[in-house]
Length: 250
Image 1 (cartoon, rainbow, N blue to C red):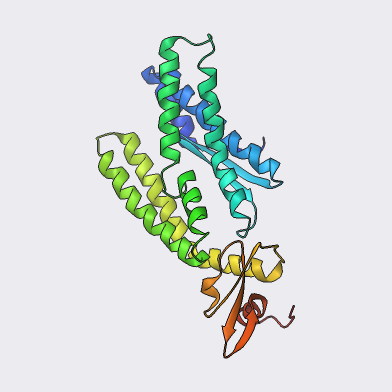
Image 2 (cartoon, helix red, strand yellow):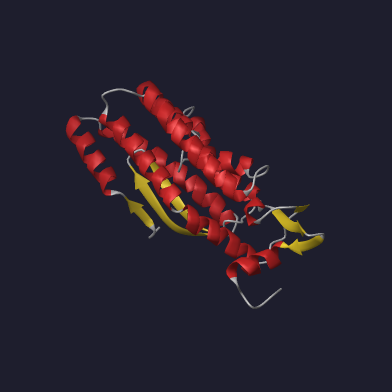
């Protein structure tokens, strides 16, 4: 695929591993990461979305998909679990008599470690997407965004405490997670306004309808909102028009 990008650090990592005699281990990690990302790709394609890019880093990958922020929560979870699903299939291949016991142990350990790592609720890992999708069933979009950020910071701290060794790999991973979490926070206003603008410009078929007092910050994914104001009911379309000051009214 032309939109696959192998990060320069990944090439450097493979080169150093080759010089140090750990090329087998490095290639196994690299192949597991590729298989993981292909799991995301498979379900993204099944759901009819387009892939913007796939970035492969030394210990993981990030697949960016062109989809709305208001995409159904079920689809968010399915895509997030796609990589884990592919990694589970790797265990089945270990029963085949094509690997030595040593190679099987290496694959098993790395595969398990990468699964556990990806399930951590830290931005931009799959665990963060799964957790935020679950929270979005109960809390408004904006609150979930901030909760995701706070939980990510907390879990990065825990990850650092439990992996506090003089390992350059650990420090690089922690630095990467901190950078991505900071980037996530910096984009908060853009993401929130994009979320609202999608709701105004498009007509989603939400299964739930809610009516309560409040402002636009109570909007939830998968839920159409009506607002109680001075004894009257306003739809979210009208509230969004007031925010964006658009003359055309649905």
